[in-house]
Length: 127
Image (cartoon, rainbow, N blue to C red; front, top):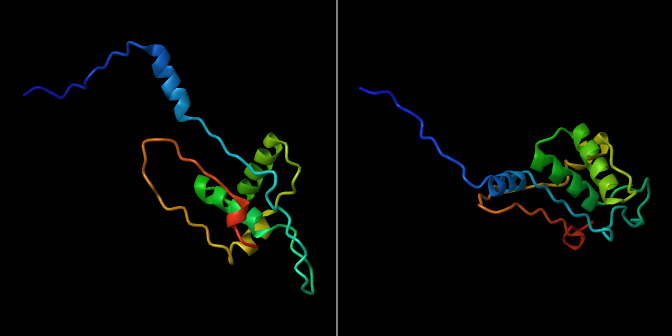
């Protein structure tokens, strides 16, 4: 009885093969500059919130999407905001921890052959 031998494939078009491998690692994240990152005054007594529900939802979505702890999530959000040229403040990990108790982030798994697009519209997130 002969042993199993792996099938050998010969790549003939290296330029398209390399381009396909590079495309697998492509990541694009868009932030809407008109997104309400800081909430309007609530009119209630006490200390006002520094970050809107949309801002917290964005951070927690990135946390779930990339499987990050809260401290690393703040670092990722801070670097992304810096990359896109927005000078918004980033919630610290304790704020995210406290506010995630009231916000629910669900990202249902959906297998696909194409790219995964993450769109965060500010009008769909209520404050």
